[in-house]
Image (tube, rainbow, N blue to C red; front, top):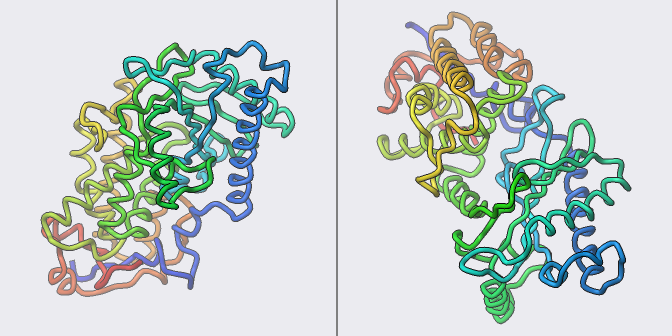
Length: 393
C-alpha cells in the first residue's frame, strides 16, 4: 500500500469539532435529571426508614424490629460511576440508566444477613412505589434490582445490599477520628469492606448472594490510572457504541467490553512497553485480539471463578455475538485497504452508525514509512493504518 490514513479526528478531536465521542454524551439536561432522580430515591428511602423507626406511619407496622432498625446507605455504581455512560443509539428499547445501590448495615449469622430479605424488599418497593406514583414513574422488579422507569429514555436501578453492621460501625468510628467522614448517606465511598461480607439481594428468589460492586469499580479505576483516565474510558465507550449500533437489545455486556478493552491495553503495554499512540491504534489492536478473546470464556477480573461471557444466554446468541465480533474485526482491518478518505468514513459509519461524522476532510494521509517506524509489535503492519504520531487525549 502506498498510502495510510489517520482517522482519529472522526473519533475525538478536542473542543474544535463534534466527533463521535461528543455524540455519545448524554445531554446536560438528562444528566441533571439522573442526579435529581437519585436524590429523590435516597430521600424517600431515608425518610421511609426514619418513619419506620419512629412508628410514625401505620403502613409500616407489619415490619419487624430487625428491619425497623435498619439505616440505608448509598453508593452509585455502573457506567455512571465509571464515566463510560453513552447516549442510546436506538431509543427505544435502549435507555440511559443510573445504578444506585442501597446498603444496609445489619447483623450477620454465619456470614449471612439476618434480616428477612423478602420483607426488606417488600418495604423498599412500598417506599419507592409511593415515590413513583407521585412522579408518574413506572416500577418493575428485575433479578437483582428494583427498576424505576422515569420516562421512555431514563431509568434508575436500585440494587439492595447487606453489609456487616459491626464492621461498618468500626470503620465509621475510625474515619470520624481522622476527620475523614463524609455525609452519612454516601459514606461508603470512603470505606473498604471485605468483599466476602457484601451480599446482594435477589428479587426472584430467597437468596442473598455475595457480590461487591466496589471491587470491580476499584479494578477499573486502577486501569484508568494505568492507561490514562480519558483514553481508556473513550475506547470503552467506542466499543459500547459499536454494540449499541449492532444490537437494539443484547450483545456483549458493558462489563464484558470493559474487561476486554482493559486486557488489550494491558497486553500492549506489556509487549511494547508503551501506551497506544491514538484511539485508532487501540481500536485496531482490539479488532485483532477480539475474535480470539470471544472464542473462549471471559472471566471477571476480580473473581476468577465467575464467567461473564458467555453468561445467561443460549448458544445461538453466543454464536451471533462471535459472528458480530468477527465482522467488527474484519471491518476495522478493511479500513487499512481503503483507497479514499470517504471510504474510511463509510466503513467507520458501518461500524458505529450515523453518529460518526461524515467528514472525509477530517481523515488525513501519511506515508507507509511513517507507519513502519511507529508500528507496535502487538499488531500487524496492516493494522497500524490509522496510527498517529502522538496520542490524542
